[in-house]
Length: 476
Image (cartoon, rainbow, N blue to C red):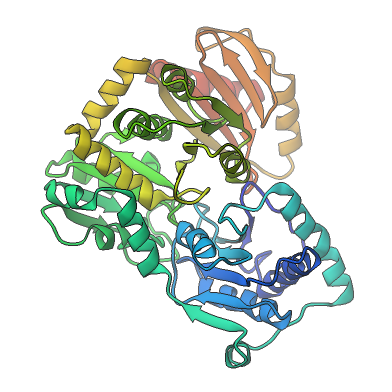
């Protein structure tokens, strides 16, 4: 078998190649060994899954291994979004959680995410301990397994439905009645993922109407490279918005922890702009204060908002295992990353795409403005910021060469803007005059080089992305 390695958030691999039932059981046993070694078994483990292929069967396999190790398992009755799984860990006061999901990865992937007792993604020391335990499990042929039916009859596995409690909690975090009364037509794209139907269920009956596309479960995620809520994957939604009749477009990824936003005219609002809008909503409209946590791929707009409202801004590496840790440490107001994941104080220290959409609807209601007007107001406050990212698929034999080129790159200017510094906090980032930036970063979950840029215009963004690809000798 190949080495099992946890990336930015969990272990992800190709179904039927590395992600097999045998390997899932091995990782589950390594996780059980870690929990027993660290005395974290008394409160049990919650296990859930999303809409990916064989998700329920893989979750059952995890439950059978944990139960065989005398660890009580709360197994979700049906698929659910990752934030609901994280919430259920807190709601049930569990020791930990396991979510079977590959998040926004292509359909051929599945994955194994570990959540801690606070609902946050497992930090690096925990995932490393699980990785380190895997060879020992294999060498000893030590996987324990108790058939699900027997585990249930012995009270070691309990099936439960967290959706009602999760829905009630989200309703309490916003003024649901005001949103219901607003009379919006909201277009939701659930991308065939686990958040399907949730926004409509949360809002219920009222003048506001939710129209949902791609709400049914389909593990093939047809018509898209991957269930990631970015413009390239939202063509149908953007076209429907451009035709008129909708107030806003909301979207979520495969496991419901990432959020995408489009305005009433069918223009996609970038993830960095969304993070700045949600931050401004909390600071200006709700009057809240606290630390702002962002990954290095996230906008300089947060720094400007932090300075305006006297709120410290903390920057981390990519991955919510870093963001969530800082959020807990500082009781931060908000944490966010470029991929469209945003977490909020008073909920869970983890991304929640469904709550992000509800907060934006609340922002529209309280401000009495359209999404395009709210973005224009933001730019009037912090200046125009544009952003984009390109993903380059790499062959295994070229990664080292391309990484060496990135390390050696020393440009004097990018997109006509002088380079004033660089760092390697997570990838290779070039700082440009005026606070603009370009980043070359290798994905921790897929064979990809990601090139990111934030600039004062869309044209300069594209110029910068092209310059980044030329620095390492790759092309789309």
